[in-house]
Length: 432
Image 1 (cartoon, rainbow, N blue to C red):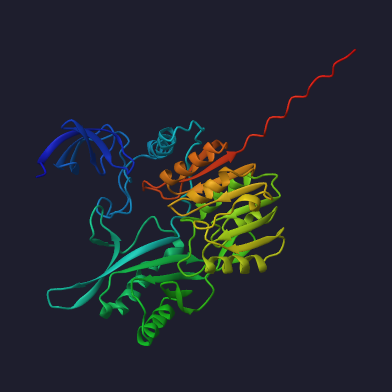
Image 2 (image 1 turned 90 degrees about the vertical axis):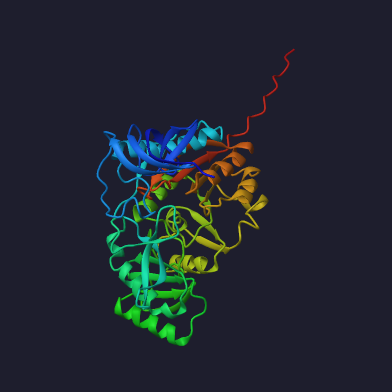
C-alpha cells in the first residue's frame, strides 16, 4: 500500500532529467513536477510521486508561465525557470549523460534554436459524449502523467505557419466521429500551407475521403493524407532545403523548428569542411544531404522509400549541386559497412530516437576520418558514441541544441575523429 502524505513541506535541491524538482524525502529523492531548485514547497506525496500544492518560498529564478494550461498539458515541463538557469540545466543534461558514459569531451553552450517556434505538432483527438448523448470531438495535447486530453484553442510555442492547424485538425477529426476511434493528427507547416496526416483511422471508405477533401478545401490545406497515403494534394507541401525545394512524404520527418535545422546544419558544415565525398546516413528527405551537396558529392541513404523519392526529386530540380546519389536501404538491418565506407572523407548520421547501434558498429571498424553524429536522445547517442570510441574514434566536442524549448528533450551534434595512424620509425643507416 502506498503512503500518502498531504501538505508535506519539501526543499527542492535541483532539476531532474524530466524537468521535475527533486527533493529529499523519507530517506530518498522524490520528484515534484513544476517545482524549481531552492524553493520551499508544500506537496502531496503519494509513494515516490508528488504533486505541487503551494510554493511557499519561490526561487529567485522563477518567472511567470506564459501558457494558461501550463502544469496541466504535458507538452512543456519547464516554463517558469529564467532563461540563464534554464540553459544551464539543459546543457547539464548533456554533460551528465557524457560523464555517465565516461566521456570527457567539451560540451559547448546550449544553442537556442526555437526560432519562430515549432513547425510540426501531433494533436490527439478522442470522441466524447455529453449528458444528452451527443458525440463531440475533444482535441489537444495529452495531460501530464495521464491519459486524458487537455483541450487547447492555441499553443504559444507553435510557429506562425501553424496558424489554423488546431481548427483544421478538429474539423478533420469531427468528420470521423462515427468511427469512434482515438486519432493522432500530425500537422506540418510548409511553404504552401498545412500538411495533415491522420493516424488511427484504419482504411477509409469513399464517403469519409470525400468529406476530408471538403475539409482540405475549407481550410486551404496543401495536402491531407491517411496513414501516409495521400487523400488529396492540392499543392505540393514544399519545404526549402538549401537551394532545393522538397515535398516530404505524408507524415515524413522534419526537424522540429526551422531554426533548429539551420543550427544543426551549421555545426555539420563546420565539422566537414574540406571533405569532398560525404555519406549522409538516415538522410530523410535530404535535410542535410542537399545542403552538403552544394560543396561536396554526397551519397544519401534512407530506409523510407517515400523520403528518398522526395530527396531525389528535390535534387533533380536544383542547380549548382556537386552531385547527389540516393539509396533506399534499411540501415538497421543492413548498415553501410566495409569497403562501402572507404571512399568517404566524412560520414554524417542522424538516426531516429532508437539510435544507430549496428551502423555505429560498422563505422567503428572503418577508416573514415570524420564522423558527425546528430541525435535527439542522450541515451542512444552515448551508447553509439561508446561503440565508436571503443573502435578508436575520439569524441572531440558535443553541442546541445534547444529546439524543444520548455521540454526535457535536447538535440545534440557530436564530432568524432579517427586519429591518424602513427608513422613507422625509420631505421638509421650504419656508417663505416
